[in-house]
Amino acid sequence: MVKENAKTLLEINNLQIRFGGIKAVDGLSLSVKEGEIVTLIGSNGAGKSTTMKAISGMVKPFAGEIIFGSDNITGQAPNVIVSKGITMVPEGRRVFPNLTVLENLKIGAYLRYDNLTNDIDYVYSLFPRLRERSWQLAGTLSGGEQQMLAVGRALMAKPKLIMMDEPSLGLAPIVVAEIFEIIKEINRQGITVVLNEQNANMALKIGDRGYVFETGRISMSGKCSDLANDPKVQEAYLGKSK
Image (tube, rainbow, N blue to C red; front, side, top):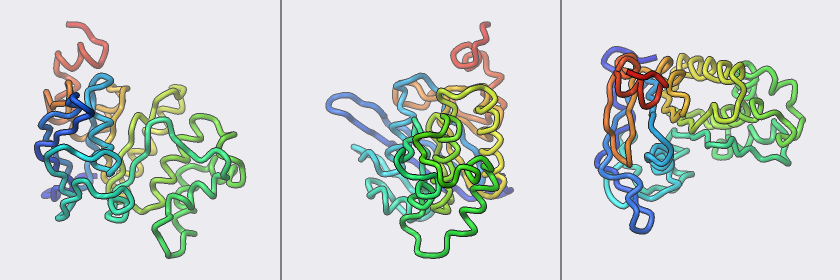
């Protein structure tokens, strides 16, 4: 939930990312305030996931800077970035299939040395099905349950900012609705959310502000409600013709 006079939590300035001679992200700038849900929409290959990977330390930028709080985290290692309060739910869930649900959750807290009991209980309160399957191997869960586990694992690091990359991908509509309700609940608990989501209708409904990506740049930005009513966004991403 966004408070009045909320501070900027994440700021990206003139980010450039190259793979060989290809500019995947080209001079991109955006910001995220504490308590926001910020939605990233755009076609595949527009640079959304690459930007998130740069924030999380999985991709090193060619130029530009990424500021989190008062820290310049540009190019820092993923474990350092997690320790500062940023976690990511990757596309495709990427749970550890041969470990139990509980073991997967504990891996999410690998940088912590305090007691995990309360946080495990909190994850189970969000996802009761995970409690029921606590000793089940993650690889035997349904796609929706694996996504719940991926979100829960990210929460175990006690993040200030959680990024979600395509959380609805490959899930049944009823499960998608459940996941989006959980995203809103996580945000109500004070965690800032950056959401990359192909289901633009759902993403714009729950987001506070949004950025539209086109070929590695930001083509539009603003309140999600305004973007949802913009004719260009409607035609390109919401399946509505003029």
